[in-house]
Length: 98
Picture 1: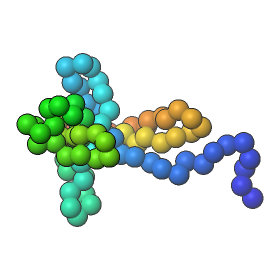
Picture 2: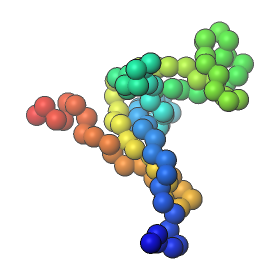
Picture 3: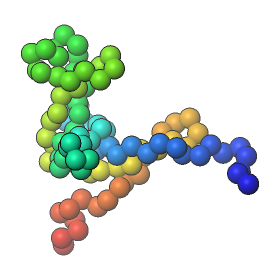
């Protein structure tokens, strides 16, 4: 019997929190053709006017470019009710080796 009053989380997204010139931001990670995560690569949105000269990919009505960001951490984004929440997915590789 399902609980009433709470919504189940049906979608979990892997994001990467990276440091940009505007501060820390979360971006969707880039997956390779075989379904694996491309290490340190994220999709960064760009304005439609700059999309052609940057060679951006169109997804829906937005444009994205792939950028490499070695600093940051992977997080899981999921929904509990209306706002989304994020949780650290793994410890960064540098911290695991110590």
